[in-house]
Length: 77
Image 1 (cartoon, helix red, strand yellow):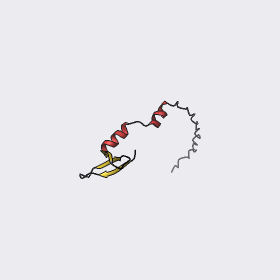
Image 2: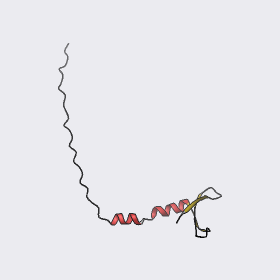
Image 3: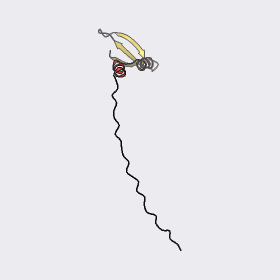
Image 4: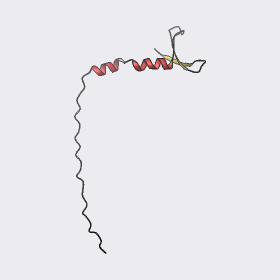
């Protein structure tokens, strides 16, 4: 389903779907169409949720010990 964008006379963005003959099949405002797209879950997302998650072993990073500098004697006057 390919959608093309248009503008209404009021300036709002529209999505239009055409049938095989080129006639408008459905026209919706971008706001409504986008809202429905966000609510809907794709087949790929559904399959990804159902697939068992592989546990990935995290690499343990050893921190280098902090080198302490020798204290310098205080200058006495």
